[in-house]
Length: 395
Image (cartoon, rainbow, N blue to C red; front, side, top):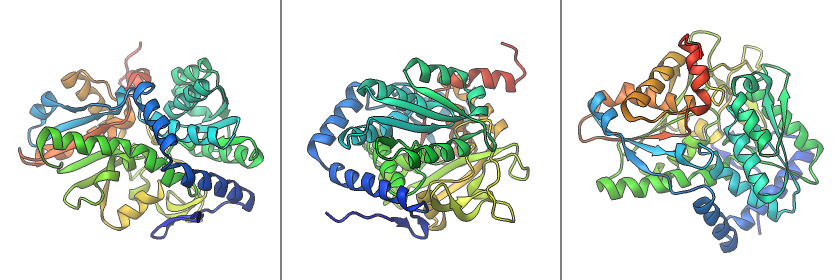
């Protein structure tokens, strides 16, 4: 079997890593290509997605929100109803089954908001594997609930104290551990980033979102949506939400990235808006960089979006003008967080609130016959304390 070892999306992607890590990535890619269409592997994955994770997730017509906004009908793809409260488990279950078949005994992962770490810890517990999670020290402080959930599930959490102490630094620490422990360790990357084969693997495992959503919207409305909107940090839920619609040229694909305190301030994570093409985390993609090509710190109220890069396929889709990417501020995301809670009784994650905020801007400008799908990538329980603090409410 011939295995691709250095896949690019146009100029983006690749494997910009030391040789020893390339050898490990080749091992992962070989196993992935072997098992990705294996009937036993797929049957076990589908069984776990159904019985452990609780898929499929609903495509919910947000009638109250739609009436409030006017314009298009808004449907919510409810990834917040996945086991553990986010889309992350879709990818984790696929990768941990791969690790199991490769004979790996130790699982590591990086996490920002903590949802990927929680999903990885849970799956490792399910399969009796050692698990260690790298999380920026600042994110640990912002997401104390998820840190406790990870430890409750048996994982060891390493607060990363270098750099900006956020997601980028957690990714760096996880890759360093991976390079030092290649023989027995499998690194479950949480987003559609990093060197090949991770962007492709994560997209494949997360494409269950759009496979379901495409069939569901056709069943409910008899036609495809006008637009699909998802938040983008690294971009796993977005690439999963876009995957089955990419060839449908009439469907707009819209990513909402984090503008933080404003794209014209230093405090943002608007990689597609402010970034330049560069090398980061083993891939070529858009990166927030200074004039000396040094990676800049990223900021967002959302711990899952404060990443200074983006998945290489998103970079390609942007340059190919197949997808559109817009920056959403903290204030807009918090307003969307509140609006969905009050109109639909659904508390979204702050990450997802960026996608909802973009929908709130767009939907009133569309016609009554238009259909918009917004991916609610996670639930907002983890963010309630942070939103209250932002609003000046003392709990």
